[in-house]
Image (cartoon, rainbow, N blue to C red; front, side, top):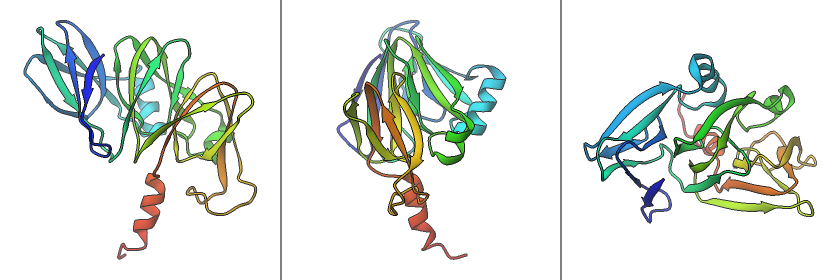
Length: 223
């Protein structure tokens, strides 16, 4: 994927260049503009059942739009719905898991599927509920988050623990579980549960929490 990203950290615009016949997939509703040399086609992701599961359990759109260049020098601009940063992931040797709303765009060679993460993690975690998104294949994947995105290296000698509303993507090589935060109060989930990652891989975290922001606004909403 050939693209440029604007300098804005909280309102970025991604402009993608497409060759004739080249296709990418983008989150439904993320297109800002194109130069008239792009064909857009919305399809259910992973078939009807896969699309329904994705919509019902992960918060991602039922449709993912395929953008195809019709001529040389085709161009399409996209932007995330939330206010925040965009990060690039190179999908290849390992798969990646994505949290709610993290998917923005990918090469056509990257597969986006729905995967069950188990009832225990669904009940106590904030990472997609019963189902999460798994990205496999080879190519470029763009994810977005709320606030600033940071990439954390996790090693066998260096576990990583974070509030479950801040982890938006992680390597498939990592093992993770949901556990109590030692009974301490103050995590933005408000439930005392955190994600505990082990192994070798990377975790992408967002500096802000949409759930925390929504809880803050509730105090000012007149019912």
